[in-house]
Structures are given as structure tokens and as C-alpha cells.
Length: 228
Image (tube, rainbow, N blue to C red; front, side, top):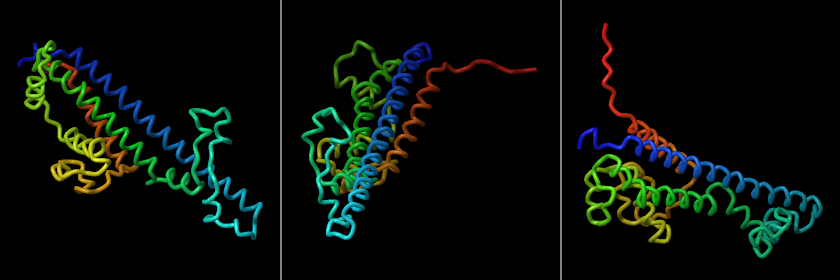
């Protein structure tokens, strides 16, 4: 391969596409977490209000309030997305929305799987095509897989793929292959893949570094020589 085989314009397009994905998922994560915190705060505020009304009675405790029913009726007045049929206790609503709760874990998993699926199903093939390693008309999967294996080696994506395997195919439990992770060493085989905000911060920053690397590849080598 030489520089004439590289499609720099296509590399620029791939950078733009990954940048859009990164920005969208980052915003989705932040907006969702803001929503989690709102719901947790809303329940706590409602419990404080209720305890003021029943002050001194058996209901004047967090434990008693946690057993009361939570619903979205006061948040979504129009039955948004079948919200009217959702029921949970107030304790359950608080627990799932606090940091480390099930909503944080689910959201982290969704973001990780979304990133990896973009890489696995699209980006890595398009990258080797743009770099001139693969004919764009090639459809034989064994040829594509071999080319990708030869020309695309990235420890970060390999580690994310191992986590995705546990999330999608093992009910969120890390498999034995996580012992082979090069960069992401948070989990051991048998651990729940519980991806919290600190994990997601590291993942977003690592993928931002990858994005910046992809950005640099859209520019041909410079042959400018500065001299006196």
C-alpha cells in the first residue's frame, strides 16, 4: 500500500460519523443521568412533604414512605409512553435512580454496546477500505475478517468487545475472556458488568482519544521543508 491508495476524503467522513456518534451518546448519557437525578430528587421531596403531613405517626419514617406507591402521574400528565400503567414503590424508584442503581448500569451498557456495534458492524470495515487494504466491493466475510485482523488492531475496541460479549450473550456477567483485556481491567470472570459514571467517564475519554487519532488520519503526510 502507498499513499495513493488511501482515500483521505473517506477517512474524513468516517471521522465525522464517529464524532457525531460520540457526541450523541455522550449527550444521551448526560441527559439520562440528569433525568435519573430529577426522579430521585422528586421522590425525596414528595416523601419530605408527606412526612410533614403525618409527622409523629407510624408513616413518619423513610422506611414507611419507601413502601408507598410511586407513579409518573404527576410527572407525565398525558400518559406519555404508557407511563400510567407503570407502578413501583417509592423505595424502588429511589434505588434505581441513585448512582450505582440499575438505571446507571443499564445506561452504561447501552452506550457501550452502541459504540461497539458501530465499530464492529461498520467502522472497522470502512476504515480498511479507506486505507486501501480492502476492495470496497468485497463481500466475502472471511476475506473481510482476515483483512481487518491484519490491518486493524486496537486494544480499546478489543476490550469493549469482550465486555459487550458478557452484556449481550451472558446476561451481563463477565466471561473468562475479560482476563485478556489490555486496558479495561475493572471486571473478573463472573463479575456483574456494572458500568457506573466513573467507568463511563474513562470510556468516553478513551473513545475521544480514538476519535482524535481518526481525525489525524484524514490528512496526507506533509512534504513541506522549512529552510533558510
